[in-house]
Image (cartoon, rainbow, N blue to C red; front, side, top):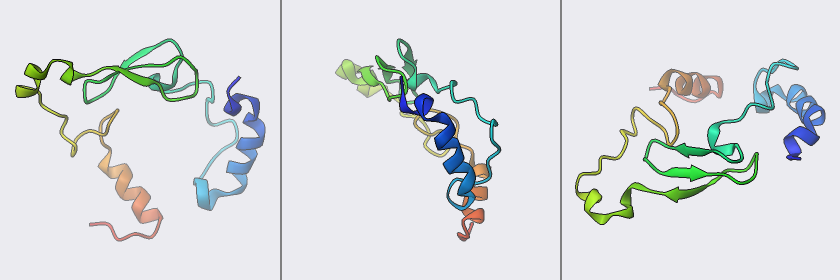
Length: 109
């Protein structure tokens, strides 16, 4: 059993007691059983770089099992993701980034 499930209540209590570190949190407000695909056992996941991941143990990050450069000829036409629009696994949320920086007291451009 993954530690986040085994120690769920204790970890939730720590997060709740330290809002300056973890941000605002409401007990019971997160579904700890829901995980992004790359952390789910037995699932394949393709990221924004077109790398295929597979995971054998729930809660840990999987391993790349296929990638777009497997055939060197593909590199001639391969287009990497736009890093301004996407992160490694999802769409980039610049508004969220600005909020985080502002809340942390950082200058936002």
